Amino acid sequence: MKILEYFKPVKADNDFNLLPDGIFTLEQDGKIIDVNDKVLKMYNATRFDFLGRYFSDCVENGTAILNQVIKNNEYVCARAKVKDTESPMILEINTIRNDDTQKVYVSARDVTGRQREQKSITEKYTMAQKIIDEKNDFLLTSSGALLSSLVSISGFSRALLDGIGGALSEKQEKYLNIINTNSKDLSYDLEKLFTLFMVESKKHDYNCKNFDFISLIKSIKRVYEKDIKDKKIIFNLDYSHLTQRDCTLDPEIIEYILRCIMEIFVRFSNLGKCSLNIGHPPVDFLKTRDFRANISPDPEKYILIEAKITDLVFNQDELDNIFDTYYKGSNKRPIGLKASLNLLKYYITDFGGDIWVYSKQSFGTMFTFVLPLK
Image (cartoon, rainbow, N blue to C red; front, side, top):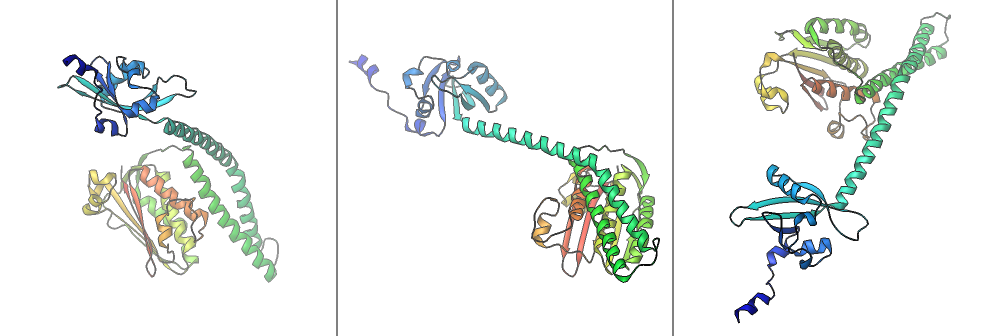
C-alpha cells in the first residue's frame, strides 16, 4: 500500500552528514525541517528533538540572529540552548537563504573553546598593558632625577679633568676619563629609553607649524661641529637639491629625528666618513614603495634624506629586527642605538613617511627615509 511508504526510514544524505559544521535546514519562519549528524552530536540529542521546533528554541535570540546574518552577510557568535550543561556552548553562525526552495540553511560551528581562549588572552593583554602603563608612568616621573644625577657625574668629572681640583696623576686622569665617558654613554642610553617609554605610553603631542627645513639643518650641524672635528670624522652635508624648503610638521620632533642621526654619526664613527644628503625623492621611488606617498607621488611634497656612516655595519639578523628595541640578538648593541632606531621608525611613520636601512661590509650603513613636507 502506498501509505506504508510514509513510514519507511528516510535515506541519509551522506554529503549532508559528512559536513564538518552543524547544518540546520529551516523554513522561512525559522521552523526546523532537518539537521545533520554534527548538530545532533553538538547538542547530544536525536533528530526528533529538533523536528517541528524553531531555531529560537535551539539558539538564544535565534530569529533576530538569522535576520542579522542574512541582512549583513556576516558571521555571528551566539549562545546555544543546551540542557544539563554547566557551561554555555558558543556557536559561530552563518546563514544563506535559497529563494527557489524557500528554505534557510544555517551552519553552526562550536567555538566555545576558542571564545574562552580569546577571553583569556584579552584578560592577559589588559593586565599586561596596565603593568606596562604603570611602569612607563613610574619611569617617566623618575627620569628627571636619574638623568640629572648622570649630568652631575659627567660635569664634575669633566671639571676635574680640566684641572679645577688641581693637577692629576696619570692614573687619576685615566679613571676620570672612564667615568666621564661611561656617564655620557649611560645618559645617552637612558635619554633614548625614557623617550621611547614616553612614546609607548602615548604621553606626547605634536605641535605642527611652518618652519624652514634648511635653517633647521644648519643649526643642528653647528651643534655637532666640535664633536665631528674632535673625532676627525669626514662629514659631508648636501642639501643643494632641496628646492622646496618650507615644512609644516612638528619642528621639535623633526629636530629630534635629525639629532638622532647626528648622534649615531658621532658615537659610532671613528675616523670614518659620514654623509647627509637631503633632496626630493624620485617619482619612481615613491611609486614602488609601499607607504602613503605612493598614493600621491609628487616629489616636491616630500623630503628624501640619506644618512650614511661607514663605521657602522649590521648583520642580517640585526637588519631583520632593527626596529625592535627589545629583540635579543647575538650581537649586542647599546640600548640607546636600538631605542634611537625605534624612535626614528615611530616618528617618521607617524608623520606619513617611512624609513629603510641598508648595511653591508666595506660599505657601511645607509639610513634612507622619506618625510612629507606637510
